[in-house]
Amino acid sequence: MLTWMAWTWPTGLFFIGVFTAMAIITVIEIKKPGTSARKGALGLVTTRGDRLFLSLMGSAWIFLAWLGIVGTPLWIPLGLALIWGTFCFLKV
Image 1 (cartoon, one colour):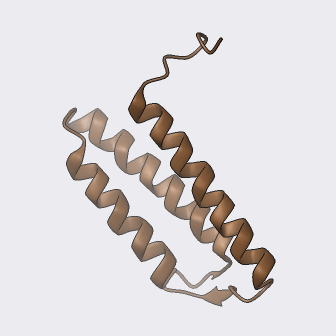
Image 2 (cartoon, rainbow, N blue to C red):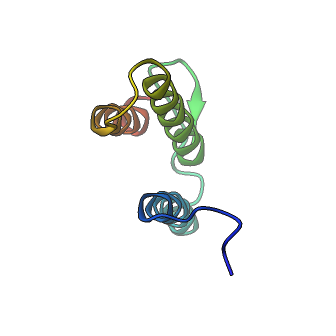
């Protein structure tokens, strides 16, 4: 049924994580609409969705750069991506 893509546990967990994060952001926004806009360290006014997008895009670039320069294992870029995501939600 889903043979068009090589579904592995890491791939499935990645997509589950992204969709879970989007669902959580949606539920929070429904409960408290418009309360998340703030000016952060980059000087931009961002919302929760903007910060989620920046954290996901930054994490993708961290992993791609790591794979291009170092290769595997991917535990260090995972840690860097988690730090980046935390920074995005707390300071951006």
